[in-house]
Length: 466
Image (cartoon, rainbow, N blue to C red; front, top):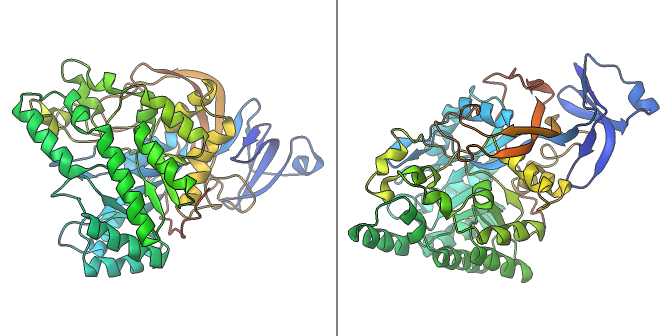
């Protein structure tokens, strides 16, 4: 079995920062030892990576991506091949994507379609959540089968009537089923029935520009749906994970539930931490680039999200990576913001943006690793195989240069989309080398990975990080 030694770096996990060398053997982490110690000096290896002056961190776990996602008559621009390659460039070595059930069809049919999309095409390891678009007695029974094969989380929508929407009764039944099997319910918490009324009224009044997408998806309607989801989960005796939390009032609902001792968890995304309604209001339809749901909020919400991450009211930062090109896709909504495909690119930039948050003093280094690596791995049944650097874990390791300064731009990113949501933003910190199960994917800023290296990951049950 091939052996690799990563020496001279600062190993950072969610719990520790230690100057240690790392021995990789057979795709897994075999040992850690103090740099310069007799143990470390005794290691022989075919490959040695000098991490002097660098961080050695676990590969990122992005628990919310949508490769090849159908939406509004088009598809997300990244395939599993292009999207996982871009993820690797950004230091993410595991994604959890969403298989989609179609209304009137079985969960199995949807899951098998996503297996086919991903199989043989991924540069890094991957797993699936299941979107429940049609809660029926038969699909409820199928939930048990999916849990048994390692698809242990299910997403429901309070938004998008006529597409993904589930009513409160359907949600309660799915939560009750999940409570019995140990599955985790993920919730898109927005009051879609009310939002559709506001969309109709805005368009009738001639308010058609992208900025009105954010205006009609009210903070109060995210908070109301979050509150309702919490109470339904409470009645069902089920844990709840609220996806893409964007606003202060929704954070307050999650915090209140957690203070009551309920197993309620929250995720936010870089776009809510770094972008705002100022971007949605950019002229000449440029705001369409920033249309996603939940929507971007006014800047004053950002501090509530950072505080939620520091206080562990929010546990995970994922990307909700669902890119649509500006040309030909976002432009479908010229003259009608409701026709703009909802979604933004981000899988390549999450680790760098969160390191910038460390530089800016929003979070600590260990919290960076916790919210980007360890907590998503725990939440979705992948820890300690993923999300940490410890003997026995998969050797998903990133050598990270904390001093490198670079500019985010569509000209240099690797996502298959024609714009960057962070165009021109300077960040400090950059991925230098990436190992996936011990194999180099990025080597000194050169891509050396391949489609098909990535393996499907059957997941265990959620380990509910505090």
